[in-house]
Image (tube, rainbow, N blue to C red; front, side, top):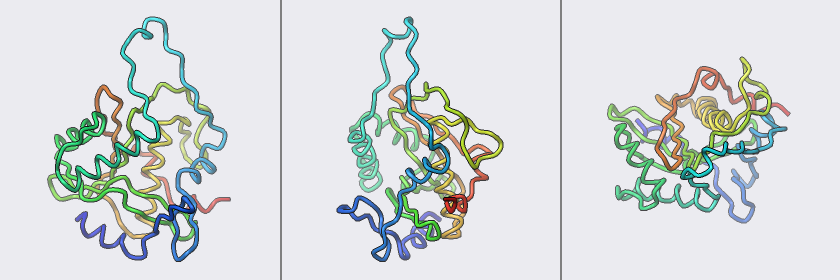
Length: 221
């Protein structure tokens, strides 16, 4: 089933232009999904970390993942998808083991998609299949810190949902799912947010509010 989805997504797929640092389609630059979500759903959010209480400060801290490390993790998972060899990177290996335990195999990584009406593009972290052959859309978050205070609520989401990094990541996956439905008429069987923070891996399905997110919201200006 995942192979059929990939065939559909390959038709007129957006291309990443390294010189522009953006996706393009037919020479037209497309906006990235993440900055578009920030502008529409949480424009005033400022990322600040909670200060650890004294009794926790001596504990082993979770790894902080830089952009470069995040890219390496994604690359390692892409190589695992191709070769079947478990990644050497500890966080990438955690994710691979968790997915294997869950009976999910990766079919493709970094799959570009676009929503033509809003001129927005992104890349799906991975598309996989479960043990029953059902497609799975995966979003990876590594070195994830959830101890961040919320700053208000997300716009265009009902009922009220706190504006937190976890909900931002959930929104990203939800909008990916919505674009698949609106642009490609693809209804993914499962969408999972895969969080590896150095102490373990959590696989989270989309909550009810996220399943109601629609791609048309990206048309708001």
